[in-house]
Image (cartoon, rainbow, N blue to C red):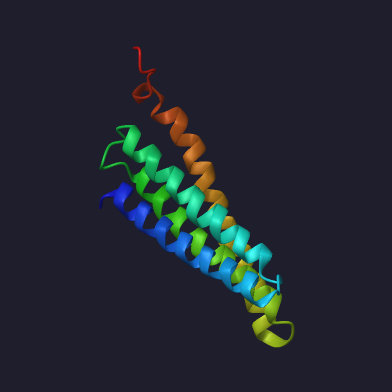
Amino acid sequence: MNRTRTLLRFAALFALVGTFIGSHMAGSGGYSLRPLHAHILVVGWLSLFAFAVFYRLFEIPEKSKLASIQVWTAIIGSITLPTGMYWEQTINEGPLAVFSLIYYIVGGTVLMVSFILFFIMTFVFSDRFSDKGS
């Protein structure tokens, strides 16, 4: 798997969806989707793009299980957090409301795991980071 390409493609998808939602809100004059729009752009587009740049700039081993888990938890969390947020906001009663809340929490937790793994990677692979002048 090419981590950079995968992350860039998902980032581009989130950018497209986020701008579509923003365009819809501007056109309709209704801004109830602001939190969803913001999370899709920041968590989906910006974070995944930043991770793609990280993997492009630094030589992280292709066989790294830590990196693979980080990439997939980032993608899965970037999908489940905003969708869970939307469902939790729109489904107010019954068993689906409980499911949407749990889904939202799990999505946020998966995304948090991705960021924790990224933090750990900055220490595990720190020998691969150097200044341009070095």
